[in-house]
Image (cartoon, rainbow, N blue to C red; front, side, top):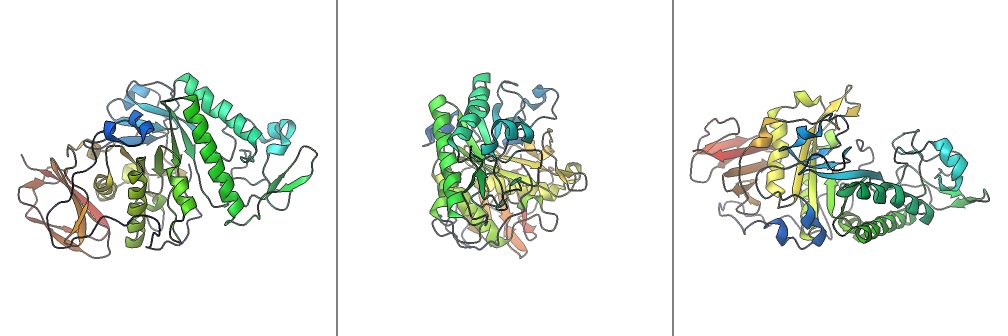
Length: 421
């Protein structure tokens, strides 16, 4: 995991993706019932994943800083890249696997000595195509069948045999952002595979081929294991068939960008156009029966994330979630240089009892809202202030304070209300 640096300019159109649910400004009636239980999922592999129908559910981003995994009990549903295969009971642990670089297994020197033809270079034929500037992790030619077999044997089969419930593939993208160009074969002759440009059809084809082959291998190895991928919608042009295929050749999509723009220092909330695009892409993934995780990174230290920032993430999560949707919130360490992943960060809002959704998300009075059995979530993703008249009944905010018959939402904020007892 790492903050993205290659996001393209985003537009509001989505081409092949179905549009956001019909907008009905003015009406306060709700739409159809929300998704059912896990056993109703059309995607057979996702039935193994924890049910998220009620309240909030967390997928923790790594747990290598958790000394006692029992701390996760009753708080965490799933861990992306867990350090523990089977602990604690009740937590769905996945094993980490990168698709394009070494998995913290061997040094670059080891590959140079044992498999020099596996290393990926830039077009000068001399510079290794390091990912995110990580010069200690060997960039691998993932299109090579021998590399795939090595990855599967060591980073898929072994952890599943150890008791992991699935694998978590990191940093998948169709953009050749690290300027891969080719490799040297066994006779030390240069083999050019790509142009070195970010937009490269051959690179895209190889990424999709690796994903499809790995997905097939996983499910042939285990009938119950799942594969999740870290991939976010970047935008720039309407989603094309290849992008849709990347997002849906899996069992769960981890959207590290979420609605907080990867915790960007300059801007950590989505624009209205970005919000519409992300929700539409999310709904497309869900319509195919996949599960979804929307990550909420904030630019400052985790202990300084404000309640307003937390509610933006949580309100959006409640707006879009079905019976297999997860979330997490974290910040950055060392003046914004390191993601605060790996430790259990608990916020009081995680324990609000809002119940289950009784309707789909709906636009009304210039905002989006969704009814729950014990409350209401409201999101204002736009650039204007909204005053929203609430449905009949009495409500309190997440701090237990009563609210009036209407509430004010500033631009790009969210609110979670609970029915007063």
